[in-house]
Length: 365
Image (tube, rainbow, N blue to C red):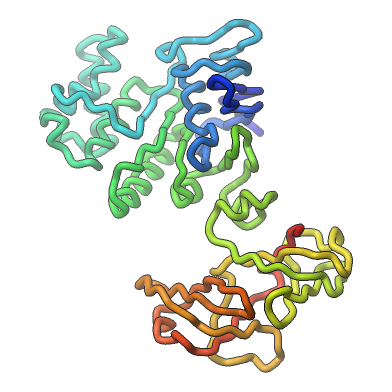
């Protein structure tokens, strides 16, 4: 990777007998949005806190450029204020007895910055987050989204090399979260910020990040660009954590150099597979699982006549406005398929599920 700013190597951390981090390592380029994603307890927040200097590591090394922030081998562990990183917490951590401007100025006062320089930097930081007009308001009087902007301005005010964000949008309602997601991305691109972002929200991770490290049980399960992580998962955990996946058991009937034909175990019909998984690993007769994303399936009330589509019966429907989620019975399997809004009228109707061979991947069973 060119222009590496941060290197994390061999991070290990135990809380008592529980291993929280097991050899975590990655590099981050300058100006990159790097997201640590995963379920609760996977180690993502602990990793961020160790990078920030708020948590000690049992083993490992962290470098910011040529500067060593942490090295257990060399017994180096810089204090948070010496790491030149800004942090935005999930709780905002707004001082209730201070105005907006006083909250933003606080980190600079702790560092002994002059009054004139504090005023200049606070005005600049509030301008970045569009809160100039709120400078003299008591911070608790602001909305949740505005308080989040105050926390962001406070992290930016001393011009850190890296911005650390720990679930920063999780306390906002859905619409405000989406708005703040766009605002944060625009601000990052405009300033060229380097962000390390922690979240359990898949949409945030996929939409904001240059790369995502999906964590599981203290390890990085896969580190990839968002589209590669979603379209080409390397493990079943990655496949099932991101989005929804339909998994059907089957048996390899035949294969060629570029794909395979699978007979389903619990439903009539065959499925052709030409997804990214290597079909050569599965000889004829092998038991496999076939996986398909619901959005890759086309739901139709008419058969194409060539027998390529699976036949099913719609048992129930969840109308979502922009789409309908249909529970379709195919043989003994009940699967969820996405249809157009008008599909909400198809309950108890016979339908056909069509998809390309490239949409299907094979997995061991």
